[in-house]
Image 1: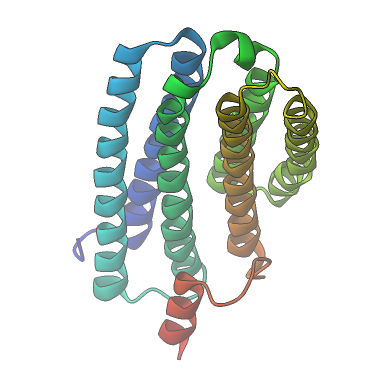
Image 2: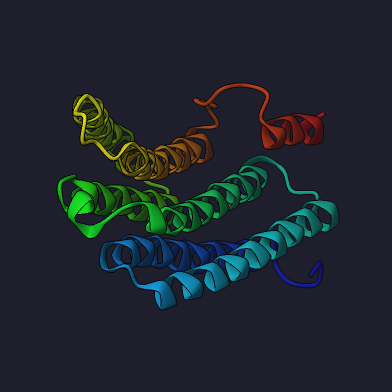
Length: 228
């Protein structure tokens, strides 16, 4: 690794990250489609792909750690590697959400799913992930800000789902387990949007050097220690 130019190594790690993001997004959308159609075979495939995502996440993190150890980057290069590691972690967690969704399949009917805005929510959250990765590739602060702004729209839809579930639960005929499953799916999509927002904020950090997330993150501590 150390014999190749630093910029070439960073470009390769960035490309791996982009490829991982595409795989994660596709698996998430497949999970929404699988639960909508009660597709058990697709659900099995989603779990297989999630295992592949987990392995890819570990491999990319190991590559980044090796880069830090061998290259000892500073300034912009250091921020880029730390950002890749953060985004890598967020993508893996989005991958887990796809599995959580299909695990709700036995608890909810297609009719119940259709009564919520999950498809609209899912598309919006997917757009946020796509744009946040585009912001990373192009180092576009404005696009990252746009992603952060979109998060409120998902929050509004999630709050609407919560209110609807609460209202339906008051009925004597309510299937409580099914309604809880519906609320959980809404929450999983909302969390996907949260991760997209985190990615966008990580891009802001990359571009400006400003940490706009909470303190105490592992990689932020790593960055501080490497700068000493």
